[in-house]
Image (cartoon, rainbow, N blue to C red; front, side):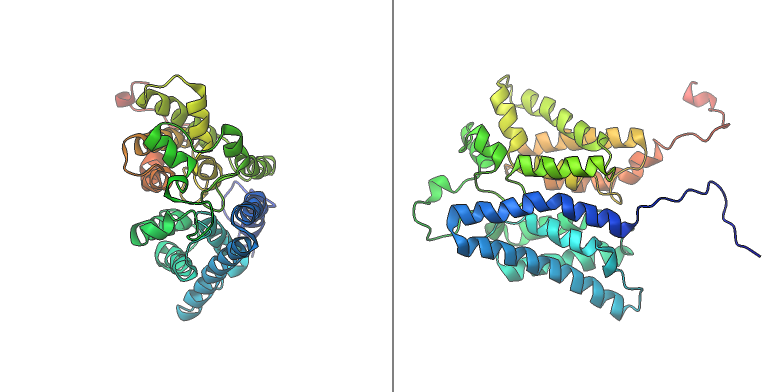
Length: 325
C-alpha cells in the first residue's frame, strides 16, 4: 500500500540548497566590491586580508556544523549551503581589520549556539549571523568599530568615522551622497556599496527567493520615522541615512530570512513596520549610530506573536461575535 499524505499536494522545484545558492550568488556583487574597496583604500594587503577574513569565517561555520552533527550523531546538513550563507553574511558584517580568531569565534557562536542548539536550520529563533554579530559587538566593540587600519598614511581619528557615524555626531556625512551610493567609503565589508546590494536584491526578487513586502515596508517606515524623529525635511539627509550603514543589506538579505520572519502576508507588513520604527529609534536616540542588527534580532523574537494574530482564517470558519464581524 502507498503512504499518501493529506492534501494539498504541492511540490516546488526549489530546494534549501538551491535557495542558499541563489543567496550566495546575490551576495557576490557586494562581497567582491568590499574586497575591491579595501584594496583601493588601503592597498592589496588589505584586499587579500578581506578575502581571507571571508574564507575563514565561512570555513569555521561549515566545520562547526559538520563537527556538531558528527558529535551528536545527526544527519549531515553542510551540503544545504546554509552554513556557507551564515558565514558569508557574518563576514560581510565585519570590518576588514577584524581579527581572524574573533571572526572564527563568531562563526562558532552563530552555528553552535544560535542555530544547532535550537534544532538546526528552521528551528533557530533569530538570524544566526546577526546573533553572532551582536555577540561580537558586545565582546569586541573596539574591533567591530575599527574600520580603518592603524598606521595607514593620511588616516587619523578625525577621518576614521563612517559616514553614518559622522551623520549622527555632526549632522553631516563624511562622504558625498554619490560615494555612499557607490560605496567609496569606510564601513563593514558588505554594507558600503548600495548599488551592489541592490543588484543582488533584484536577483533575489526575480528568482522569487524573497518577498518584497518586508524590505519595502521596512525602508518606507524607516524613512518616515527618521525624518520625524530628527525634525528634518532635507531629502539629502534622508538619502544619506538610507545609503549609510547596513539598512539596505539588512532589509533585503537578513530581515527576509525564511526561518526568522513571518510567513503570513499581513505579518510581513507588521514585521516591516516594527523594523522601520525600531531602527529609526536606535539610530536617533541610541548611543550607536547603527541599529539595524538589533532591530532585526528584536523583531525576530516577535515573529511567533505576529504570526499568532495574522494567521488567515480557514475557509468555512465563522468569526466569533467578539471579533465584531
